[in-house]
Image (cartoon, rainbow, N blue to C red; front, side, top):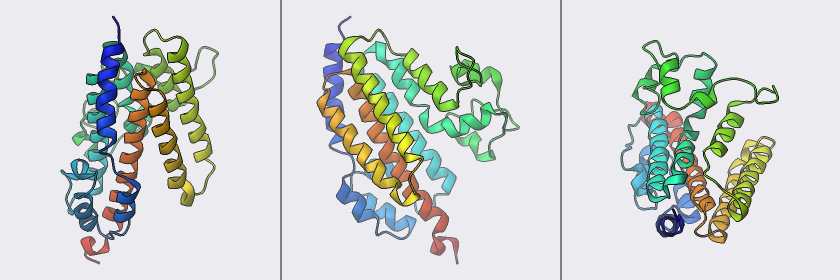
Length: 259
């Protein structure tokens, strides 16, 4: 089946959604909000309005954290619905990315906090004791993330196992399609390698540079599968930034805590 018409449809939808994402001016405006309530009030007149709709000035840190992950999941599911059927498995696999830290704890045999049972994706993976339910893990398609060596016998971390499984979910992809996706993978990997070596003060600057490159990548590769993943990467970066801003104010808001 020719995926071109479906990719063209998805591209049009991506472009429309891209124009609604928060701008640099929005983030600058929000940076001056000292409390969680003030931040949310300001956010509701920016491109973040739909993302913060379910939050309030009384939201707890775990509620904000969980809410941002759910927004990432909903975005991935929406993009999967727009996309050619052959690419949906790879897109749906991307939706697990915001949960990788929790999945890593579970894969190591560690337990998760009590609030994890409220999480839309975690509650089906853990038993009453907060530990991993192996059968549920397998049934959720997460066997590829189970600890173990690669084909050469070398140990892989969870991120590497996730990426290997993502590539395995691509449909037949040759020529330009493959080159585009390989280039996208190198872009993300290069960012991660640089990110590990920079001081925290430079972290957002590095993320902003990646976002700019991803946006350019999306425009340079129209009606190509890689555009689907570039868009998701942009949204996930914005949600990561929102999550950080909300959590810092929820945790350190002395007025809200009564100090």
